[in-house]
Length: 627
Image 1 (cartoon, rainbow, N blue to C red):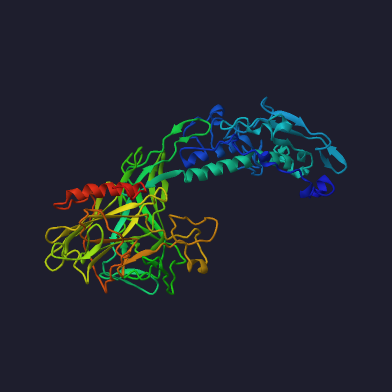
Image 2: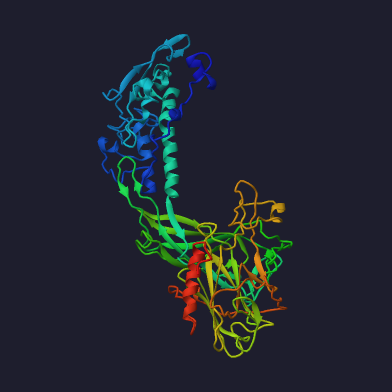
């Protein structure tokens, strides 16, 4: 019927003028972004601009506000909008529209009538029907001058509606609608509507997405750079898929139960578009939740004696692990801590605060690789009652540190000598492990009758801890770990402190080829691998006197040279032990809810502590020659 009325064929799509969509000018222009303090304001700001008069409606800044007041639709054209419901046969228009914009009266002075010439006029049969468009300025308090280029052909105004010729073509039996069909929307009207609205839709959508992800937390390690501690020597089992279970509770993961990290809210203030109102993004209050989420893969080759790790002996020979499951599982897994409540303003400080996260219901496995810890906050953020803020810290993978009783030899400042009456083999009755600068107490193994901390060779007491530590600031900085032995009777073996950069068992990409997994990159902190190639880092643990100890392998022995260490025990070399008594149990002081305590002193050897503290400060600075 339409073709019969206008005569000839309808215009083809490819002959229609193109939609410009902002002509490469992102909205709102000038490098700005759309910002509001709540999600609802991206749609409408009527809760702020509360009036219903025309002047107030034009101040509203939401995308729905602008669209609603600026353009007609087929159901809101003059003569249709006032019908209840619109389009009802025989409808009598009400006295006035229920929403006054766009202005119903197209004779209002704010409209400009633009006559269409022969090029744009509509032909009916062979007769040219002259029609006109009515234009009006787009009122936008966010970016008032944005449309100047797109609407240049109309003097900066948008052609909202076209005078209709259909009223003269309507059959007589529908004549009642002729007046109501006095205006219509043409392709040209819709094209300019798209030119105006599509860039805004993109800009507002971008701003809305940015708003959802605006919450940012800064996550950092505590001063001692310790994130988590466990006793790797506790009894546990490993199944064929590389899942490590507690021996006492076979359904529970064997790993790290507590994590300490520092956190603060670094979400930038929201500056509301079109108003300039600065809205601080404060956090905390009733109903808030802060959880830690550990993301990792697994080393399925892991075994309780550490033979499933990549091992390097003193000569530098590396033994690669091999197993059916591989040193890195293909699927990333997560562990989630119990939630913490955040009080109002607690995270909104210049100095980050320390938090202890409880993973005891879902531990981080001892054989984790590619380990990241994300802190997730949910609750009040600025004016939004239920928002999310995230921060991620790329921690080192579990790093093993080993201590053993080496009192079958002592260091006289020149050589290692076999034990004698002055320096006999002796049990370490109690043993403390501390770390960081200043050194804080991580672990205690208190001796008892028949159960000392570190028994004597030839089956020496061997303590292996697992640590998750922070990343060093550079390739020379090392993290100091201190061993404090308390012998059963005086004299006491010297305090020892050794440094580690932490284990780096990470892929440069989320998925790496099996051939790359079989040939991991070595010394990743000293010589980082390129990030643009498929690489896999799996730094080895150290083997000393036949013991698989860890990245830190710390013998406990007497030294007549004070706290000064002799050379590496395998550089001499001292004979290997046939076996060792790995210690389970002990107190993980790091997991206590209170603040970390200072490292306990050793009786009768205060001169050693000053030396060790200087040595540890040197490790932190990357200079282990400081004495």
